[in-house]
Length: 114
Length: 115
Image (cartoon, rainbow over all chains, first blue to last red; front, side, top):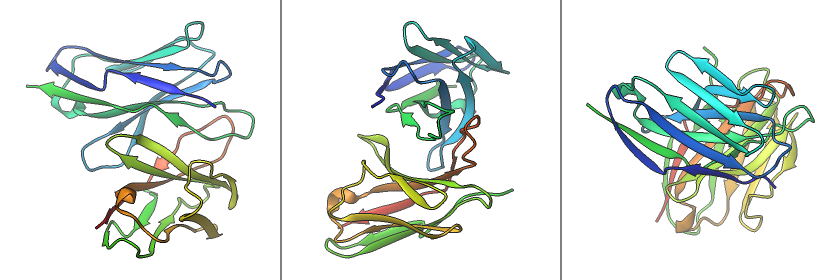
């Protein structure tokens, strides 16, 4: 089955700086890679996703890049703000074949230092 | 604003007792997932349903856990007997089950403490 590794497990950055979280996956058939954000005591929520037919996707201050050859993808947050403090989970899935399962990474606790 | 709901939000019980957690998926969603979240294991998939049929429960300890969908508006996760190591937050999530769109919408979770 799919295995997703995520690094680092914790990350502290100064407010205004950029943060990068990296994930690798094992199954070359995976074609859908979402990122979920979980604030303290709250539910995980989708913030951005990317499909294997594109290499990069941006949404305001967040972007995700995908390297299919190397089987890794990354989340980039620019101009970080205190409200970016949360746990971020990457995930991988094979969609289009009646499968909706997501395999999650172990999470990155991001702390923004004011 | 449609959301997944879960009850109870918190549950404290003693070892050996039965625990039942309930989930109401978003109306119209046909996939339901149960996850367990601990500090050490992240988000661990326990069970997965599509159109109320169980598709994958390989992540669930079969001897004490069971998951069902009595109808399209209710999913249940039962632990019997409960053990201290079951202490965790249990999330339910639902999705549209469209092969090209795979977002999962999470409920608020049930925080279970087994003493």
